[in-house]
Image (cartoon, rainbow, N blue to C red; front, side, top):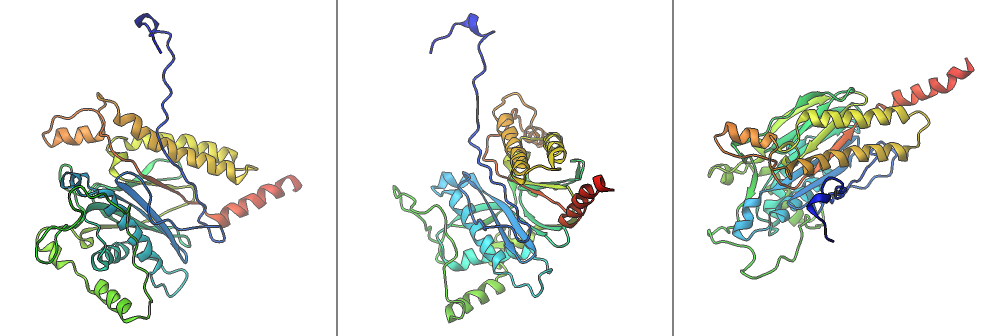
Length: 362
């Protein structure tokens, strides 16, 4: 198509639709649910799994610097979330109300990757979260710059997790170096194509000697070989705990979100969508509510994309770069993976609905 300079004032803007995928799940007891262990999110991945009265979920971000060494960082991050989902589902809980430990899940997942012998090399940050569906308690284990924000019932941030960095733009990360016991480099040969997107834990007979030995190795792994040479391990993950209340929202994401979007922007988006959800709840179909909450997730991710393509934006990343002595302006192009959790006290909501139905009769 042709256009003239004089047409600029009347020309319509070009529609831009970021390639964002959204899925909304109801994880309440009795609802249809299927766990997910990895996604094709560029160098990002995510997982979620339900174990008794716990929802365990999280994100991982492959370190892109490994591309320069011929190693695909997406394989590492997807494999890490696959092992995390498996570790969550294999957690032993005596009672339904017992809580899962996100730091232990991260530990067992990473140890499992090391002893399973899968050819997944590189590094990734990881955030593992465990939400008790019985009590509303959220437990977190954070290693690196994948972070989260807890929004209260009015969609104002009541907790903002800080990044975990060694220094500017060098986050804590889990690493499996591409070398064997003799120090030789392993991995694909030059010109060889990757044949797998990621690796899941090997299927084994739980009662076999091989499976028992694997569990022993995982349980006893203290990552001393890694920490002795300066690598980060799950032991370095920062732990936290939050009691969540009705109508609160947790926004967890890889650094592609909070490098480009301020917490205040997330608050405004959440306020707009949650007001729409709450105004439609009475008599609204659950599908309409799910669509609106999915719209919030889409809008948060889209805001990150809209911000990182701006060259003159004073992004959070640009401000941190300046404080570290670097000259950087604009957004930071990156993969963006966001997981939102909306907490509802189902017993309370059901009671309120019953009261509303009774009021016309009183």
